[in-house]
Image 1: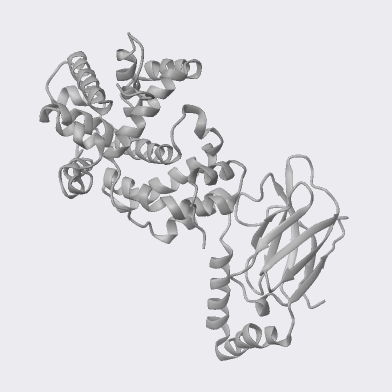
Image 2: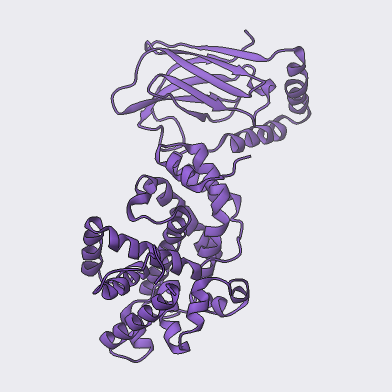
Length: 230
Length: 179
């Protein structure tokens, strides 16, 4: 046997190696598997046997890569993080505007996307305020295409988070993430042209830990404000 | 834009709740894992559902992936294989043993085009040294999640004899793998 070999073992380990393989293949019954797992927590050698078998056995399933359709990742994000991605939401916004109002909307979009940014404006600011003693300020920088927000007042209840939402005109809100423990948040807005952000509303709601599980705000809006030139 | 140069680092960052790292991990590894799902399940919608579940598990269990000392890629592949074969088992249980052909394609694939690409893999070399009738039970167990009950029915052997035979095959395989 080679030195440092994951299967290498002292005498009487032969059975354990086969057992580790059976465990890796899911051949053990529930009691046997439980017993093997318990032993692994105490015995690093057993872990090494199991790891060695996994490394070998997976060669059976490895093959040429096949790209999964994009909807799979969208579904995963929706299930894990509970909302549409900004890319999807912006796409829907453009489509909705075009279908809904035809040429006028197209002109508006061209204006916002191409003309406004040409006015030498590189920043948008928003002050978020409400009646709940929660406030924050946000700054968007077109050079980095990032929006940075900082809470200036208020704190969520223990085990809950403040979540920041972007409302593009006429569309349901998109989450920009939750504020960290220091009350700060940075969101990448590179998919949304600056002109579209002009006048868009930002708002904060209190949500369960790590943010709304449903894709939409579940708590009421505690503070809001519109993005505008400083 | 987002690729994951270091998979281990990406998994570690997933454990800290870093969604950008999760996106990068998905971008770098999903084609490999989807290929496994398709091969084991041989059904696109089922493979897409499986891939969702697998990455949800990856995100949820990123914290504990080091526990058994698997390399990061092996961990991902193992999560994928285990989930896909669990689905096959559930499918067989639901159809009460009827129509178990889905996973057979995984076996065809082993013998077919893939074989040529993977001839260099140590495992394949060692499997090819085993008697043919000893290889199939191992492939069925690993690629289709078949149990000793199912194998013993298929190969018309008592369950205990089936198990002893398979364990002996594993010992031979190990001897070759560690050569």
